[in-house]
Image (cartoon, rainbow, N blue to C red; front, side, top):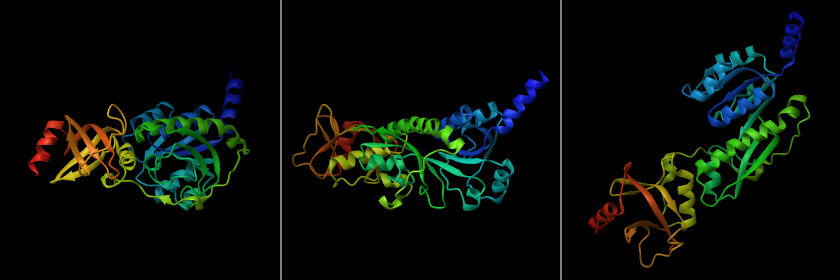
Length: 312
């Protein structure tokens, strides 16, 4: 018995040790991959104390887990150094790691796009907004510049014409899990590929905020529809303001029973035809809106029509 225990302890000592900065579904799924792949995760850093699924996993696996608003606190650097990691992973963490943190051990980030496309923040939302046909997950080396290090592995997922950002995010989580699982053995033994990441291929995109959801009805219907898809629930929704009331689209289609119908003589913006709500766009095509809210409360076609008529 004592000999077996000694061998087990020796195996544990040889396991590669990691610190994981993790959050949300990508963080949870990729942390499970690290554990399944034999990595000794000594410390998990998350930036939300209410990330219950992640903290519960850490509790079950007896992994020390701490919450931090950012990665630049001196005491956090001391804790990461104290964990003596061989590798550092950023898995859906959402904050840049400072240079002194990156100097502790080789660091890798899981980014929710096919780099070098959609570098920066809100990559899924930007991909949907740009009407991309595909996106995916990319594991890359971390450098001082965001999403600029060599690409280690990627996996592609389709973006279907009516997918919302939420739909695409769910696919990207699976792609991230598979990307890390596929490359982890070679990453641990030092044979993983390093592919060129052309940071000149596009800008580093900013974080999208609720205010970015304002609709410009002068744009073509496809662009307005893509904005709706990018901002659809659980986000706050693409919106338009009328007489101080904020109308947000929760569900809409560019096609459907009404097809890609063309408005005849109707002004751009919200309208009601045959007890159905439409959004008239700059190219004359209309979105069929099946769920609309007014300052957060559902509004019916009859209610909207009465409000629009009262403005005349």
